[in-house]
Length: 252
Ligand SMILES: O=C[C@H](O)COP(=O)(O)O
Image: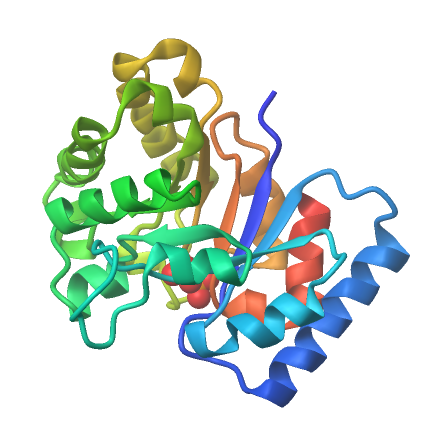
C-alpha cells in the first residue's frame, strides 16, 4: 500500500509574512483536524525562503522541498542551487522537470534526467514531472510524449534507485487553468506510467508514488485520489490557500 503524498508547489509566490501565515495556518489545521495524518505532506518553496521555512517547520509533520536543483555539484554556475545547499536546509523533496521549467527555461529530458540522478546521489527524493500539452493530447500523442519523458529518466537511474523517485503526471493544459483531467483520464495515464516503471522493476514500480497535478482543488481531489494509481497530488494554486490545501490533505 503506497502512502499518499500531497505536495504543494508554491512556484514563484510568497513573502516572509505570507509564508509565515500560510504555514502557521496549515500547521494548526493539521493539528486540530487530523490528529494522525494518513498521508505525507510537503511544501516546495522558493529557494530564498528555505531558511525561513526550515525554521517554521521545525518539529512539524510537513516536509520541506525545493522546486528545482542544479545538475552540477558546485562551481561557476551563476544562479544555480546545488543539492548540498538543499540538504543544508533539510529539503527532502525536489521537483524536477516541471512543465514550466521545460517550457520557459528550455529544460530537456536529458537535463531533467541529470538533475534526477544528482538528486538521488544526494539522498533527495526527486519528484519527476511529465505531461503533455493540449496540442499533443489533441494529436493523440499523450502516451508517447509522457512515456518518452519518463523513459529518459528511467534510462539514467539505477534499478536500486527506482523506488526512491516520485513521478508527477501534470497535463500542461490543466495547470493553473481550472481544467482538470477527469479521474478516468488521469488514471489511464497513471496506469500507463506504472506499466513503464514495471518494465524496469516490477517490485519497485509498485512502491513508486505517482502524483496527479493540474488544477487539483478541494472539490475534485477526492475523486482523483480515489483512483488506484493516483498516489497523491502536486498542488499549485490551491497550495497557497491554507483552507484549500488542508481540504486536499483531508481528501487524501
Ligand atoms: O506543480 C503544480 C502544478 O503545476 C499544478 O498547478 P495548479 O494546481 O495551479 O494547476
